[in-house]
Image 1 (cartoon, one colour):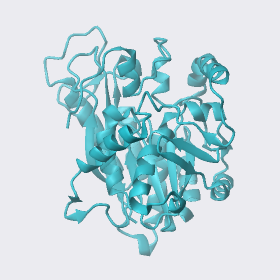
Image 2 (tube, rainbow, N blue to C red; image 1 turned 90 degrees about the vertical axis):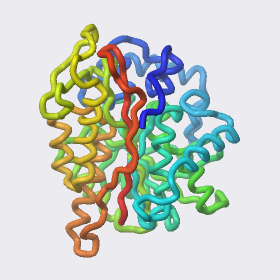
Image 3 (spheres, rainbow, N blue to C red; image 1 turned 90 degrees about the horizontal axis):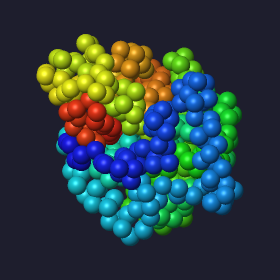
Length: 385
């Protein structure tokens, strides 16, 4: 399922998911992986000041509408060109999966990647073509925080999200209810403008809404939420707060996550001589290519362990795989919150046997051979309720 080699230069790295503004050798990884500790926050604090100061002087941040900040870099800014690209990506996905026509009825929950469309767009199309929006009145978008350290969750303060196609409206009333139920803080607007984990889903969502509902007046509203660095019990608490919304068939959910980030930029360079997640050793950037199986086979094995955890339906099992491999799944907390909620839901008789994720596509930005190389993995999955 390899689609592209790792891009050379800053422009290519930005499309992959490495912002060209973040070229400091220590800090560049922080824009890709969520900030998981106060130490991470301190390391990036001065950088965020620099970026937000730049935004404040060069861009008018609208109070009501979040601008499409990555348009023109991570994805095309021209509506017709972007629509053609996303439509082609969707058309490349089969019309049915395991005998079920797409979209799959009741597939109200998806996991999809959030890197530049050149790299993750074809994989994301699998999740979006599967997504059933037919009854949706609102769509929750849960993503990790890449720009500031966050504990708990954070809600948007914007009223709309801009895309090259048009605007998606935030359900402010429901967002406030969930904000109170989950004891959420509010996202700083400058950080929300910088955050790509939510934005990268909006063009695909807009197009699928257009295909499903036609008129923009009939589109479901959105509920953007950042999920911070919560431990297992805290994820279960947020999952419990999410439970009433999962039960409502008029709610759909997009979980934003890339999977393994491998390479020196991500401080993650593990290798298995048996291509197994059980015997990992650390490589160094200056090492020669291993004599055994290529590095990308280790990356696949690590990702397959994480995907097995996702498919297990067990929140604890998912966390256990990440603890074993230290896989750099940037959206592990949004995934964890949803898995905790689905596991609770499955304890109710009418939902038994439902809500288990099915992985339908796996891709990588590069098939790594050398320790000096890098790769980001992408997964599409869905769950039926």
